[in-house]
Length: 112
Length: 112
DNA sequence: TAACATACATAATAAACTTAGGTATAAGTC
DNA sequence: GACTTATACCTAAGTTTATTATGTATGTTA
Image (cartoon, rainbow over all chains, first blue to last red; front, top):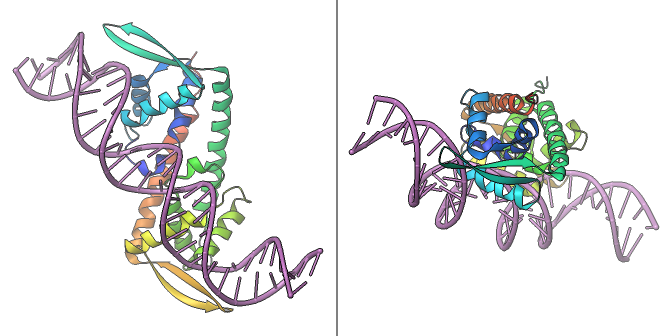
């Protein structure tokens, strides 16, 4: 993603799994639009990051795809496999734990 | 850091700046202990990540160091420079914005 | 007809980490 | 006495994950 990109490393996979968990099936380009919309344009998934991430998740067996034609353009729809659903739960749990830890550290008051 | 390490990329610098912002001066090893303590051992800063990050921050002029002897062992104390204080504020603002965006995405309810 | 939007993709590069080592001193354990 | 653990610094090789820059192709809007 762009904008605050340094912060993002490692979260893209979790975002993808969460989107597919909530929406049953989505295609890549749709995910970029969705994230942009949700964050009012402050978080932008770059396609150079997204597509390799999708291919990796598919190779790992967490998602699977079907290609369909829509108005003369091919769309590659992805959905979670059963192991992908478990992975989504795990990744979400991990990231919320991480965010909690991070907030513990970042909201410490100065020592007097 | 270890444990949930994929999630951590890009946040280490912000954590360092925040620790120095709150504690005036700290040495590297102390930071690893502090983060471990705050997170009850769930977040571990590896020294292989920490020391290069400290050196980079110093090269960028955001922190400066003084070496002191403590019980026959050298400690390298770091503190924020004036530009480092501004950078700390900026990075903290960025990371909170990012966490907010992330939570917007990750807490979406399923579409009916 | 040029630019923008849709929709996929890859390759070179850069950044940030993990893993694995290294040096040195001190304290505790078998 | 030997070994492990803790303190305290450090670097290097390799991996992962992103950015940036392209490329292909179709459809729509200015």
